[in-house]
Length: 323
Image (cartoon, rainbow, N blue to C red; front, side, top):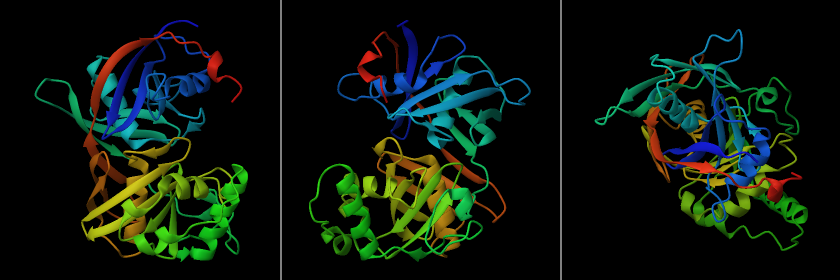
């Protein structure tokens, strides 16, 4: 394959390989994402983000396409969108502020600020309005109509046991479901579902660190309730303006941060009366400031955008074909 120049960037640890798709030839972005995302044998990352000119007729300054580590295409990534703004502005491709970026969620504005070295260091994204109906989230929940909201719906130990057992069967492991983490983490028997252009399920607990996320996150992502799969979050409320969360990301697994997830968590907290409309949310990779001023309004997310390094990828894709 042809050599491809790239930049490695991250938003509080949510890291992607960024490619100027107007300058580089990317014939199979899904295969490329699978190849470069391996953290042991390749560049490493949560996936690939292609940055290009907006499509004809779209009133935007740039376009982003996101491919997860497993090659699936995502609609949105808030941390990735902040880094797209840095990528575009630092390269002189546009200096619009706010920068308007075409995404799978539509055209979203990103306001950015330069740091001491003159490069973009921080950005605030208008994430769009949350979508709350079962149809918008893309779920098949027993007894729930397409137009219903799923706020504080039951998800108890029996449902967890069934979900984990089904996942174990899918992956060829028939061990009995161990729910000792349930009481250790004080996970509540309810969940709230929100779409931020991609689907999220939010569980509340007292200690997210006690969740075996690699097991239970994978089980919920591929649950029969979610035919398009789903992002999974465990959250503790420290104060009404301060939350802490861990994420299992659809298509990527455990991630240090998830901007759309943090946005969904705040929305879920507001709908359930657990938190204020603006809060700091701590993720393993750092802190985001999330605000949702009114029910019909956009969610705003502010946080850093960091450049790690540049390079050239010349690896073969044959190793990952067939997915």
